[in-house]
Length: 397
Image 1: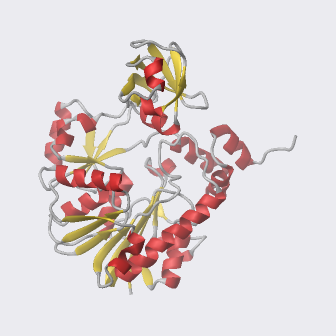
Image 2 (image 1 turned 45 degrees about the horizontal axis):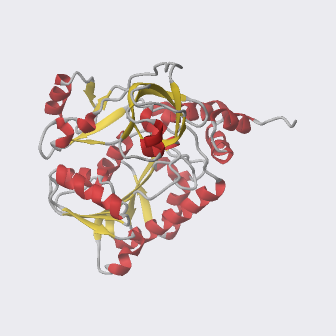
Image 3 (image 1 turned 120 degrees about the vertical axis):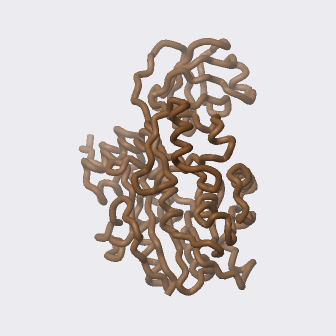
């Protein structure tokens, strides 16, 4: 039997694509690549929420969280960001009948969410109110709970909660069902996503375009920074995702957003005279930095395809941006092709220049792949406790 190299060993041990692992090993070395994957398989150590400064204050939200017995602290430099504790890991008992759920369901359930029938792959014969253990396809036990349907109804995909989670590996406060959320006082948003809108530095009465806007986290954050002035064009080609954006806009009391269902790669053709002061390009990516991610099957072909696809958005954004205007490019992935090398493309082909951020977040980009990348920023799961993210600020010259 041939001897496995370090990348293959890590790939086999953690159920991560060899193409992903080999890249992480190339960028960071064996030990650190393994540590990054360990982190990616767990929730962020930092769970952030964004305070809606249009209708409340950080101090008021902190008081409300204290009343709910939820531990929280203000972010040291971002006024509207509040950081919450993530508890765990906890042990999951092996007693109870087994339910195997899909990857996305398990990634939610391991943080305390209930399991819905749509996320179940297979299960033993169970009765309503029986104790069950939820696993992913690799046998990792992510939670235990009480069945709220019998096995027949679950596999017939009767809508609703299949298992009410009573104990999970990690626990995050369920703020989505709190008055803070329903009253529009907060938005549940990762720290890197919050940083993107801050890096854009939008000013009042400007025209801003968010090219891949739904479900609206960055759009609504920009709106509150602009104090509901100016205009924000929020585009998404998905009707369902755009409905979520519109729901969030309404819930948060946003008044300056125009939502448009459109593939934003066609925006310059549909509106040839459009010129924006600032643009957010947060395109679809391979999402390797998203966490928790229990396993990953991303291939070389998907990485290259994603990079090519992202350049289509960048090309259109460069055409729509005013001279001297600002663009922020961001992804939740970790490959050089989708990040630093896309920025090299912007400098060489699109008449854009990289700008320094007024505040430094995370670490500099991987400049050994592109010297100018020292002006870009990466948030690393193992160093910063966040998802893996890339952020760059560009100016049209």
